[in-house]
Image (cartoon, rainbow, N blue to C red; front, side):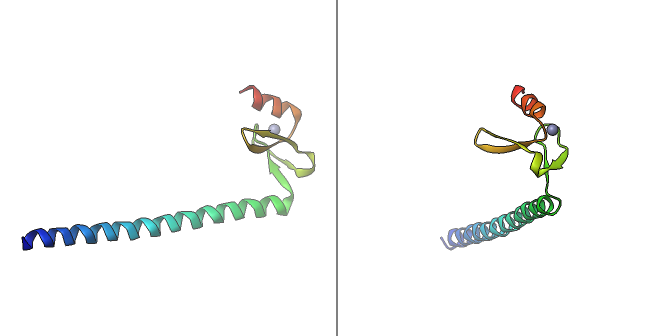
Length: 88
Ligand SMILES: [Zn+2]
């Protein structure tokens, strides 16, 4: 009976440790993710350049062709790229 209690206690501790480990891991990942987002936004603001969703080249934000596809606002360098993207 005492043995069972000890085993239960160990399982409880392992679960607790695992949960705190998962939490710290998740915290680390969200921090990295936020840093990536901030970095990308800073880059876009700095040079005022946007990446084309079709051909992946950077172009001035003023020349963007915007299109909302599947709920996402996408930016293209030209009408041709927009056509290429929607064809896929
Ligand atoms: Zn393009």
